[in-house]
Amino acid sequence: AMPGSAVLLLLLLMLLHTVASAPQDIYFPGRSSESPYEGDACRITGPPARTGVCRKAAACPTGIAAKGERCEFSGNSAVVCCPTSTDGTGSRITTRVAQQECERYHGAPSNLKDHVSGNRFRVVRGEFPFVALVRFQGNEDASMRCGAALISSRFLVTAAHCFGQTQPASVTLAALAVDDPEGDTYPVQRVHIHEGYRRRDNDIALLELTRDVTFESAVGPVCLNTDTQLPLGPTVNLTVMGWGSDGQGEQDKYLYKGTVQPIPTGECTQQFRDVGISNAATGDNQLCALGARAGEEYTDACGGDSGGPLVATVRGRPVLVGVVSNGPPCGSKIPGVYTRVSQYLDWIEQIVWPSSQ
Image (spheres, rainbow, N blue to C red):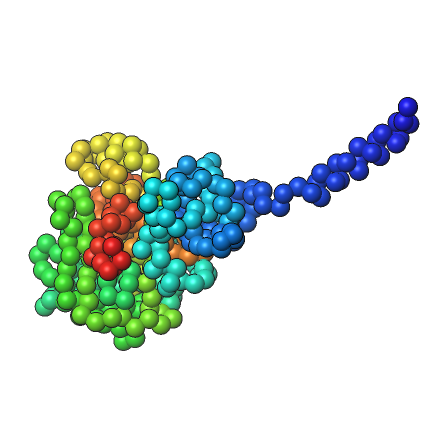
């Protein structure tokens, strides 16, 4: 019989061999920030080597046999690098054009960080290069201010309700103040209002410029949120920005930012009902959010912020998740309502990038 010490040594050697020869492509969620996310482009080592897109395993017709780049998990769902080549059914899996444009404009993550909740802060130059101030024809009244977000060299996304009374004349980018001399102004050629816009629902529009925007360090587009599964729970910090009032009824000429957190749809609807508002649009096309309390007020979007961007930080990069739509008086404890951008990707893409359809 083998001595006990020899048996123990043999078991130890077998264990070490097992660990050393274990597959190296086992992925543990959350261990790496370099892996692509669902919807991102990825590479398959092959053979043959080819490109793919990160999809949930259940949504990849070719299965998970292809050896490719590791993709981040989406919740508890496995995400694999799914080939973009034609599968057995003849269909072709491709990355959304909005995601392709995002990758083309943004080769590397930015240094955007979450902001302190419950306060308003002045924006510094270059921090949000996609934010634009909408200027209206023959009207410099501060109450007519609206914001917008640059999403391509020729288009911006904003709120449809901004254009009920008058038409936009131009947009100004890289402006930290309403009268900022360093701002770049571009004339608006056309307003595309969503055909389903009805006061509070489908409150989204696109501004088409007469010429292409020149991108620079202080001017550039924001990525659209193409991940419909992006977790937007109550602990997620979202940044809203605009030239709206300070909550005391005074219009501010400077661009400010604030942090808000998403409110679950059911809870948001109930909060509106509690104050006697039963017809608030708080469905799948909207996103409710509210910031922490600061003094007597809650961080929120205000009048003049309409149409402005609501962004999440994904891998250090700002991603447009919402557009300031409507809500109760700013600074109250009732959530603000934002148009959920991911619900309108098809509509946006066919107008902004028609040749890719």
